[in-house]
Image (cartoon, rainbow, N blue to C red):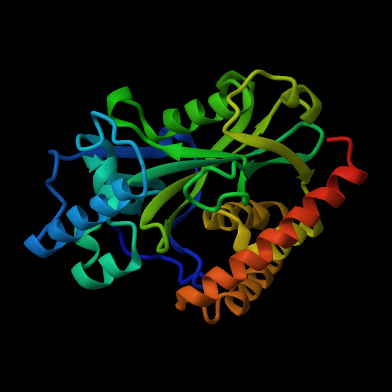
Length: 311
């Protein structure tokens, strides 16, 4: 993984690895030989085997390709001459990722042993000045019942896709919005989530559609769509009110896009709020307590939102 270029204030939710405005053709992707960047010890492998046994013991059904490489490891992130550079290693299986999904793994064996698959998050604004969010299904394995910014998912080896293509695929699957219905498509940064041990490329775009037009589009039922106002006050309301109930990359996406829309002072204010909110975030007990509290708060926020908004 590349050097962290922004310290992200003192907040503990995420680490910013790269930040700027990059068009799709300003993103360079290099793919290594499988496993070239992953350093594993016998102890790390034993940890993964133990984690996999626990995963299966919970009743999770294994699939035939769970042990085969399906995702790209984020080997390095950098910026050079106004371009975003990603080095990816096609070596991550679902078993590797789900079985090492613990901060303990990184603490014990170092980041070079972490699968760190690359995901892509897309924050979409509509032509009627709304921002698309998604409410997460209760059955999801991360932040069930919480919320996410627009859409997101992992870049997949079998599809032979670029990071931007992965983002566009996820967007169309989850919302019905097609790539040719987007304007101002850019990458605004790359962020690492230290709690799920994976990296996200964050894309920002505007769609030519209204929020009402998006709602009637055919899409999968993985998440429920919700539209909020694209204003500094609205972004702050959802970030602060549901701080511990969201996919943390969501906050990074909204803050990065928000800086471009509302200014640097707003961004710094939000980072200071996140620093205060994550002050004791190193404690699992604290994180779980805050998440439970904010999931309840989010449910009320959504109920209130539906009462006063047609969409």
